[in-house]
Length: 167
Image 1 (cartoon, rainbow, N blue to C red):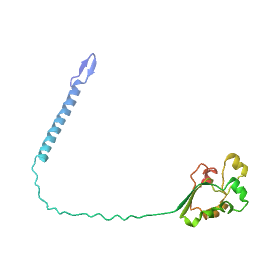
Image 2 (cartoon, rainbow, N blue to C red):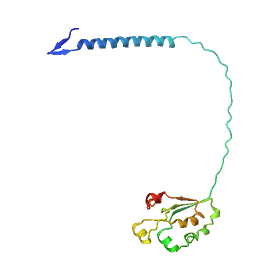
Image 3 (cartoon, rainbow, N blue to C red):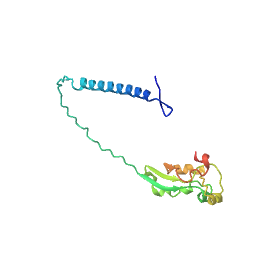
Image 4 (cartoon, one colour):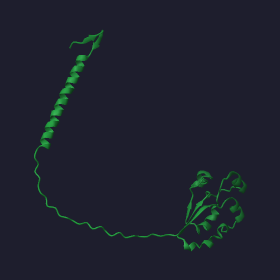
């Protein structure tokens, strides 16, 4: 094969002409094949057989309205830390003593936000006030369970006692 030189540089023009020629031939063969395949499948007559159909009426099922009711008492944030803990003086029912006036039997559930982690940690009253580090002693749990069915723990003080207080 002869190589061409343009300004002293080898030219591969002949190679490119051969490559494009081969690509052109393959493209041409592919196009002819596609046209022939279309002709075979599109223009070939197809046999169509008549099929008997049967009409079916679909009757919708009647809708039964179901009513679910519930009576819930929603409360805001509650906590039995800081002054509540100090003023209870060991009487863990004291913070809940007036809740019977809401007639608990009248509700299916009571729901509130518990604004502190429940841990056995002993945090002095003044530290809780000064640093806003809350802690609810578990001694109040039994009394709280008499009234509250659900206590939400997702709040800004949930992690006051770190990982141990959160879990």
